[in-house]
Length: 153
Image (cartoon, rainbow, N blue to C red):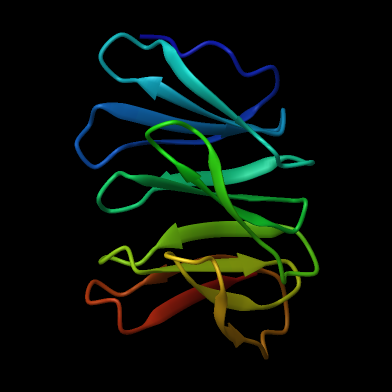
């Protein structure tokens, strides 16, 4: 299927853990949820005010995390597409956001040279890792969720 609907460049796309949905995000400031079965859009998630850089599902498929050059991370319900939390704290573009393997935390990284850890249940910041000398482009959890590895320029 061709997933048509974004009005600007698509920056990322990924399947839900069970393969039934696809999430995509775009420079058009939206995140979209799609049926993997027929390729039809099921929800358009609006709220970011600038380019959405990445979006991905939680390990259980119930939530989507997105990040944007508007300096925010957003949590959404994958069931109905409604925003559940806006995570603020970064002072520059957020380049990557993803869930921990157990889904209890999220990690985000930014051009502000920080990595932040967040609670997935309430969207509150739990740790800020600073000291990087350049933009942090991506960050991911170890398989057991006990460590985070950041990537800078």
